[in-house]
Image (cartoon, rainbow, N blue to C red; front, top):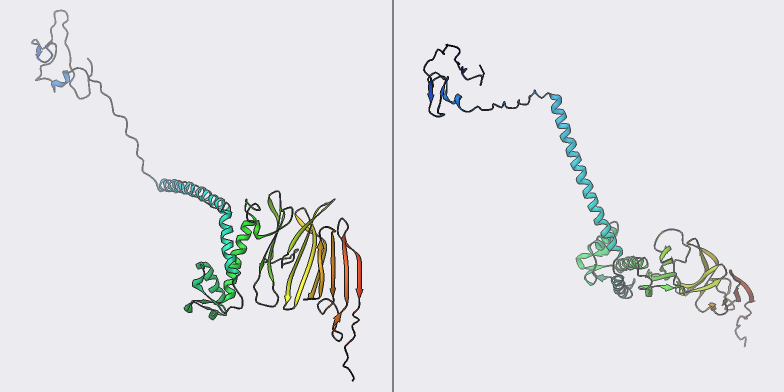
Length: 385
């Protein structure tokens, strides 16, 4: 006896034993399979399909157990979801940071790599306009200049505090000193860019006073203050190994080693201890005043060190000589004293006479010759006749 399936009737085959026959003497014949024998007739079977070839019954895999989700499980799911979101957000933020960093570096690179020719052209245009500006002019038309919105906004913000009437945009007029200030900022900003440019001093040095060894540079710009003191704006740059290691800008606050009014010439003196620089300059101190100055210096560890310094304020016409001779390495000073540098005899109309020569001794200048004569002119008396 064999069990085919739990839902099928048991098929029992009755085999003949000795002189014994099954209870069913008449066998059934199956036309489909052409078989006959000890099988139940179709009318007895619960279904003819059970006599078909044996089929393998495969039980389906057990369904996964679905336990009810607790509140704690919900919290875990939400926590995992939030963590996944944070991870995605962090990845996105890091990616954006990297992109922005690359963009920033690219912008910085191209900004530094700005064509020096464009800077030179812009300075030439601005200097051309600046030289024609006067602090004594009543004002200029805004339309005559290519001011940016930022430049105009800065002026408005300054004026709005106390002198709004100084800027009369309704009449398209602007005071001259505001125009001068804008062009000063433009020129000085571009001069600084040129001094730090990779192509400097091969290009752009024409705006500077340059030392013979092409290491010390001085840019000077008329301050156009409008007063009797004709102040100047100066910037000094010192280069070594193709880069600026010291700079001093007169328009910035702080202590000044160099004269803030700049210089007229730069010479070098070769010494056993290295190169020394001799700078000469002058500035108009009032309508009839002149101040002249000479400085000798050298650089140590990228910082300037003073070796000799002398200045002479005077009235126009009082000084005969105040100069450095490159060949003899001497400084000669000759002048008649006045109220700017000594005593002046107003009664006799003269001052004391001074003459002095300084010679370079290898490290600094020392006085080697001095002459002094007191004013001996006698007062002109009226003829008693």
